[in-house]
Each structure stands twice: as C-alpha cells, then as structure tokens.
Amino acid sequence: MALPTPITITLERPTGASFGKTMNEMRSWLDSKRIEPTYFKPVTRHNGIGFEISFRSSDEAELFEREFVLRMHSAIVTPPVIGQAGASHLYHSSH
Image 1 (cartoon, rainbow, N blue to C red):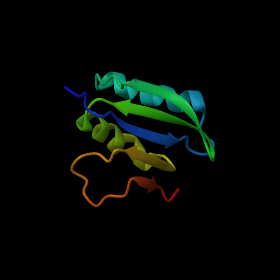
Image 2: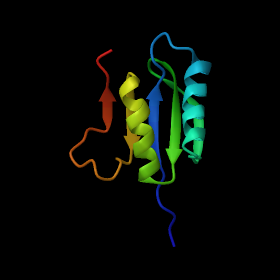
Image 3: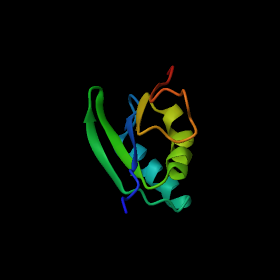
Image 4: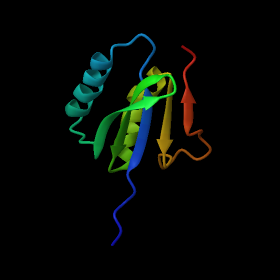
C-alpha cells in the first residue's frame, strides 16, 4: 500500500522579520495544535531564507495555511490542498 503524498508548504520569511522569531512562532503554533509535520526545515529562497514544512494530511496543511500563508510574502503548496479547486498554488501578500 502506498503512503499518502505529503503536502509541502514553502514560505518566505517576511521582509525584516527575525528568522528565529518566525520559526519559533510557527513551531509554537504547531505544538499548540498538536501537529507534527513530517519535516520542518529552513530553505534558501530567491528573496532570502524561508521554511519548508510538510504535513501528513491535507487537514493539517490547510490549518497551517490559513494561519500563516496570508501573513507571509509568498508560499507554494505542493500538491495543492484538497478542496481548493481553482486556487492558485502560489500566494502573494500585498504587504
């Protein structure tokens, strides 16, 4: 039996935001929701350092997405979170 494909969200750190503070905020939120990502690691993006977080379920990814994606400059969700037909997989905030 094949394991489900993890859903990966790649976020760019907000401009001017502390790397440590941003990472701690995400980790604290994940802990408060009792969500354990399959991995959580820093990545180098074209605008600096960001984060790559993978989830076992679309429900976990969707909760995280609702909380953090709109606050960040951009995010890429791969594969798209189920139930978001027609939604773009690349999000840009206006800030």
